[in-house]
Amino acid sequence: MNISKTIIKATLLATCIFWFIIISKNFEEIMLPLFFLSMIPISICCTIVLLFTIVPFFWLKKKTTTNKTIFEIFFPFYAITCFSLCLCASLKEPSLLCFFASVFITTMQSWIWFGKEIAIK
Image (cartoon, rainbow, N blue to C red; front, side, top):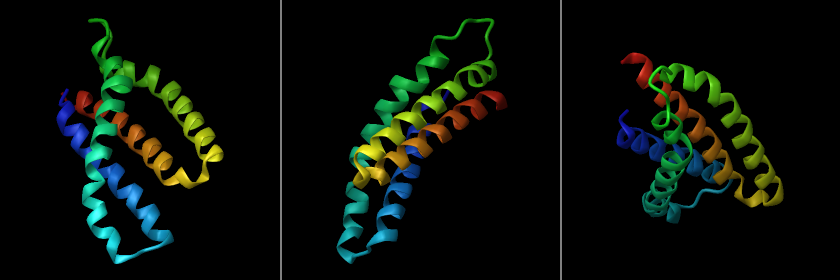
């Protein structure tokens, strides 16, 4: 399981989604340097979320359980929980919609990357 590669891909995906939502509402040239600076906190957030919420499912598996089975069993529950938390937080604080949308999409795609990486092996 190549965790560092997935963290890099997740950081790039989350950054793009986050900034596409912001830029679609209001674009100013002064925002361009912030795009690259925002990658630092976004990468920290992606690392924490992946290491503490997704990777443990694959690390704590039994020897008889395949990663495909882990994906099939736990992904739907994770998706429902993540969607519910992001929706509640977005309704409570609508100005942070771009953050919670990028969190949800990035975590779902990260599950797929982990599941696909294992299926190829």
